[in-house]
Amino acid sequence: FIIVESLGNKQLFQTVHGCRLTPFMDSLANHQANRLGSHGLAEGKTSIECLPAMFAGIPSLLETPYILSNFSTNQLTGFPRVCNEKGYTTYFVHGATRGSMRFDAMANALGFQEQWYRNELASRPSDLGSWGVHDHAVLKQLSKKIPKIKQPFMMTVFTLSTHEPYDIPISLQRNYPKLSKEERSY
Image 1 (cartoon, rainbow, N blue to C red):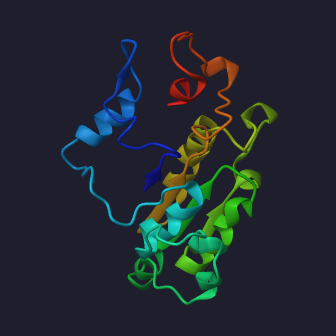
Image 2 (cartoon, one colour):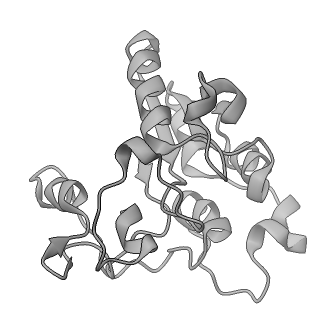
C-alpha cells in the first residue's frame, strides 16, 4: 500500500494552469489492476486518522482522533494482523521520526511486525527535510530493501513530502510559478 500524504480527489486527475498535478499517480489509478475508491467510508480526514481508518475500518467520526482517544488502547484486529495470521510479514514505513503522530503505537496495535522510520531510512543528510526523510530517498531505500524481503509480505509506505511545509529538495524542484507550494509538492 502506498499512502500519499494529503492526496485525494481534489488532486488526482486535476490540471492547474495547464499543469497536471499528479501525472504518475493518475497513471497508477488508471491501471487495470488498481481500483480507485471514490466513496470510501473509512477514510481518514487527517493524517493521524488514516491508519485506523484504512487498516481497522475505524472512520473519522470522533471529535478526537482515534489514536489520541481513550479507545486507542482497545484490542484491534487490523488488516496487518490478519496478514500475519496468513503467513505474511508486515511492514510499516514512514520517513518521519519514530513516534511522530503516534504512528508507531498505532502500527503496533494494528499488528505491523516491522516498522522503518527516519533512522532506518536516511542515508545522507541531503535526504532529510522538515518532517523527515524525503519521499524520493525513502523509495530509493525501499528499492534496495524490498528484493531482500522474504515472500510473502505486505508493506505500507506512508509518504510525507506532500505535507505542510511542502519542502521539496532543490534538485527536484521545478519552476511552476503559477502553482502554489502545496500544488508543486504533488
